[in-house]
Image (cartoon, rainbow, N blue to C red; front, side):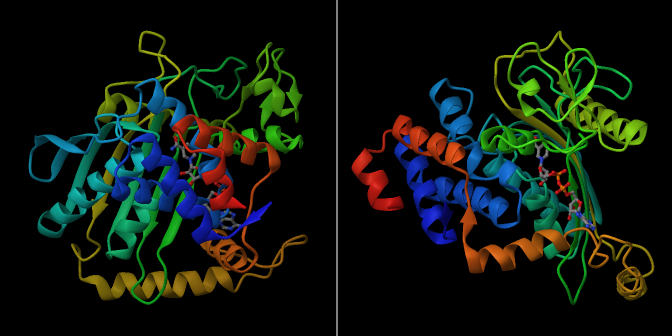
Length: 354
Ligand code: NAD
């Protein structure tokens, strides 16, 4: 099915208000999720709703929790998300870090105990739009790991996202925002829902053999999702685990820590005013000229053009504003069932989505 952005946002907002969230919180979560779909990341969009509604029901996700500063050393902050909606506590932590960086030039913020932060680029974009550089190392805990180390077949970590954003005065920020697994797990989930194959080189089965069958992530005997970029992507994933998880969160995927089917993100975030060195003009000029140079590259065979990070998402927004957001039938059925579990009547669901 195809659904229009505003209609979907209103429906998702009502799912969460029915589940007990305030209107403000529900709308922020809905906006974040629907914008992830708009940007082409269905893995981190409304398909997450069944997980969120389940986690509210079992008490993993605290709908009224807010980010709280637990340690304040000026340019170094420790912030606790208190298991609130990541979309809310992650944005609040980013606002706190950004406000502080306006005085200190740089902030390093540890942000721990956030329920699923969703699309990490959202927080980078908050910084980039305010004219700041940001870097985010994130780990994912609270459940069994899914990603194997390079050279292994057993699961040891999750999809540990990394994000880095560069602002531009006259254009949208440059946003590198990615899972450190070969693909985001949500993309394997979407492929599984659609009955489609996952790209080659992403998954191994329980014997460590390459496969494109998404079911190895959901049915025993389990296989694993591999890291992107061989040993280099694996290395970055380890740093997300140790810095986002170990340092900021004091919670890594090691088996001594809690695994109760929750989805918790910990993040180490750096926010930097690019004006701290010799002034902003030289930096802006270098960014502008370098981006133009990259764009001037002749495309290789099979490519239409060369892009910079963040452009595919903007192209997706233009496309989906026009065509609507595509949602596969299985994912939609899961969302509608979750709306029912949250307490929405069938009649109300039909009114809002029919
Ligand atoms: P992806 O592979 O689609 O894109 C990764 C990055 O590459 C993006 O910055 C994109 O702009 C850039 N890119 C893509 N194609 C490009 C091209 N042709 N030229 C230049 N740049 C290009 O993203 P992904 O790895 O599937 O991650 C999807 C989302 O999942 C991200 O938003 C991430 O934050 C999120 N995520 C969240 C969690 C979590 O626990 N909260 C975990 C994993 C991933």
